[in-house]
Amino acid sequence: MSVMSVKTGSLLGSLFLFGAMRLNQAQSVPESTAIIKNDRVVENRRISTKAVKDAFDHARSIQFENGMDNEFRRQLINIISDYEVAGVEAIRHLVDNRSTDPEVASMALRYLGAIDHPATYRQRLFVLLHTLKHRLPIVRDGAVLGLDFLGEPEAINDLASALNNEHDIDVREDMQAVLAQLRG
Amino acid sequence: MAYALRIINRNRWGINSEDYPGKERRDVPAVTLLDLAVKNNELSVWVVDAQRENLQRLMGTLSANRTSLDVIDYALFGLDIFEQLEIYTQNTEGDTLDTYANRWHLALLHLTATQVSDLAVRIWYSSTTEIKRYTSSQVTEFIIQSIRDNYFALDQLNPGLQETIKKKMK
Image 1 (cartoon, chains in turn yellow, purple):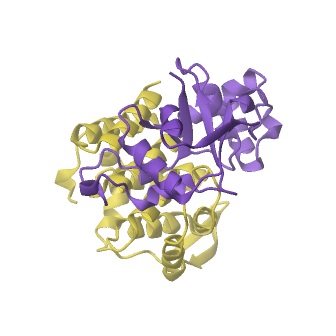
Image 2: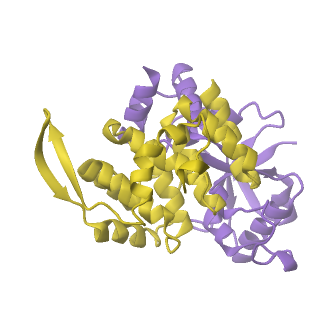
């Protein structure tokens, strides 16, 4: 992804500074995050990328049921709660990784949108918009459903643009439903 | 014609896919059987009237039975499939928060392995079958509407879902 490829006027473009910093790191994952309270750093935590990868690997054996809690969802909540931006970035890294199970990646995106964590809102929004261009329909669908959870009207332009390029019937249906919802 | 409704996971039912296991034999992917998992050789479905007037209420109460807010996927197909497969059906009380909607529950009884796999094939290939999804936003509206219509109360929901719906209602 290059700066030139970012569509003018899209939210993804405006969030690009966040993403460019990370996307240009050649798939590296930040391993520490500063926990800041009252404008001072109170703790630096190292994120265990292996722990995040283990969570994704173990999730391969889960039979995901819509609306039912599961260990993977709980682990993602903990990762984001504990590691904030670095946690989101570690998840994005695995979603983008070709060896990640597509259903697990899709569910991760859905949960990424559903998690109630204001401090990482913009980062999670960026990851979901970024993943609308994923090569696999099931993963793009996870991003769409994640955006539905966020309910962010600023995502309309990017979602509408993605809809124009979407060929999968099921993903298109979800995009149309979420767009209608966001447009109120 | 009334319909039968079965809650499924749409990702397992790639009816619109260009290719899937078994297509050349008019068979279906084995993963669909996960959505037809029996308990004591029985399976739960719900009856939706011909005008689908009870569909949203049904979606509201079925979604309210879960632990967290999410999409709800369902297969809607003709009740005649059960007769074609000689599946024994019985109206029994459902187990949701909406006591009125519970009367729309239909139990499929004494099922055999062949009947279950044939059911998956019939659902997949029936021209009247619809595999549909309501998004989490739509599900939210159904649940909130059901609460406002006093079909069930907010405090009856599972704690995680209750917290989410409470925030949405503000």
